[in-house]
Length: 176
Ligand SMILES: Nc1ncnc2c1ncn2[C@@H]1O[C@H](COP(=O)(O)OP(=O)(O)O)[C@@H](O)[C@H]1O
Ligand SMILES: [Mg+2]
Picture (cartoon, rainbow, N blue to C red):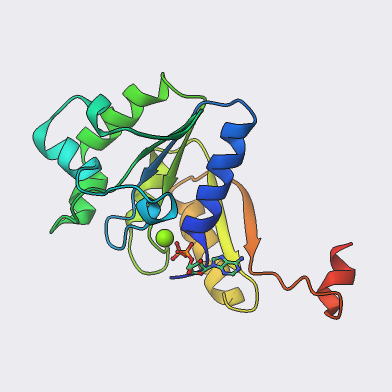
């Protein structure tokens, strides 16, 4: 769903992995409501969609955030996000880039709203599902997992976000 914390958690994960001396690239593949650039205060004047449109070398579109962490922002929101996400150009780009990094993280739009995440899963080695505590309905989670399985996605885990951790909350105890 929207606002579960996909962009927040993937940005944190990418940052932490970079601090663990891994070479990380984070690409904003939410071509509908891109916000990765906001997480890191980056310019989004030129990004992925511009790179694909101009058939440029990717080097000029990579922004370094801190040692080990590079970002490619979304670029201009295209009229046809689904086509862009489905294009051979994007698959070839990711294949080329995968030789340069230990891990590439791909941020996506919400799974239940559009097919983009399922398409992205087909060219990803692994998928992490973000779930917002007390917000995401079980039925929605089940449907999401089913549709990911249908495209043979390799779901390696979930992130349970927005979990209350106050001492006075029962979840605090169950967590421990
Ligand atoms: N664990 C959290 N606690 C509080 N606020 C959060 C948490 N995770 C995300 N948010 C906030 O929720 C909003 C949506 O998060 P975002 O990562 O953009 O969601 P998504 O990418 O799934 O749409 C943002 O304002 C973000 O700061
Ligand atoms: Mg997002």
